Image 1 (cartoon, rainbow, N blue to C red):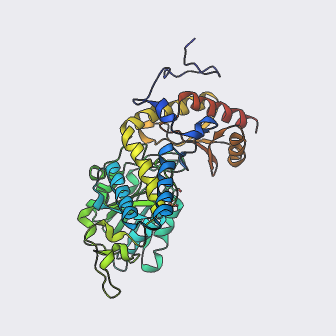
Image 2 (cartoon, rainbow, N blue to C red):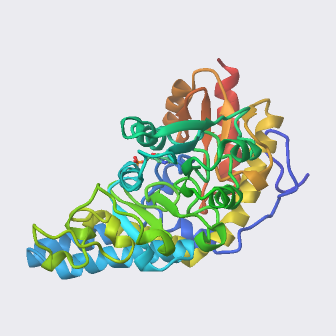
Image 3 (cartoon, rainbow, N blue to C red):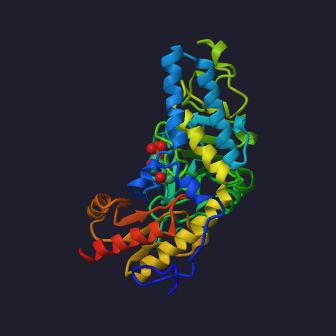
Length: 397
Ligand SMILES: Cc1ncc(COP(=O)(O)O)c(C=O)c1O
């Protein structure tokens, strides 16, 4: 019998497959793995020894020195630099926010929408919060048109027809939160640029699992929070702004950290920072920055390309294994067009999520699907156990 054959009787020729890094050393850093199989990484990744230590470092600093703004703001700058490293940018290309919603709102506030060029082309695969920000620009003149999701994916050619010389901005998520469909951001950004429009990409579902180089993609904005595949916590999000467009943008969602020098700024003068920090607003989320940096350091140290290679193995196993157990996969089954998340159509996803959690596997329910999202520390055995449990529960309904 194939040594990697599945207890349920199937095997996929990935027996013995190993990631290109020391997975056991990675697993030793995640206490939750002793009791659970976290497959909810598209929603919240588990704590590591490093992220915990980073949070404690901030609490100790606060407790021991009362206040240490130099160290705290240095940590925010280091977190920006770590994010920049992850996406092939430099720290001065990055602004910091408390959420992706806030980052998108700041970008929207910098758009001039009262004239002829007021079109906002928005993918229907956007996490709802991002689409809501664009829809909220209606009273300012914004005119939203949606690139529709069909069978869980978006036809890239749709953007070619929707984008025209009246388009101000295209908003296209890199990975679809519902089922892991991966959009061709480079193609979309090129089409936007040809039409004289800006391109905004929400990469929350891809950073940490898909290598990203913002310069190669040619996007104008790229944003992500940290609590999913970047191994961080709530309260922080980053925004890349392409340096060539910074000087033309004046966000009305602003604050003292958006000034040339926040600490000498005065009430009467609105002097814009010459870099992406003009998108910064108020006091940054310091404790979240400590944790975010630690999480991103781990991802950068392993290497997004090595993580991606392992996800291709895990994703294939999820798709083929799920199908052989009679489960229905939503969206594409082509790993070249998928992030880490695989979605299965089941009856009553929230009830199945609860039942799986009770038995030590953490999935996430969304609409009519149940999502299984492994990460760099996930083993093939974890995937098989999650699939077996899901199939058992789905069949019982
Ligand atoms: C792709 C994507 N964008 C945005 C969000 C939410 O952004 P925020 O709550 O930081 O505004 C999520 C999930 O929480 C998401 O999956």
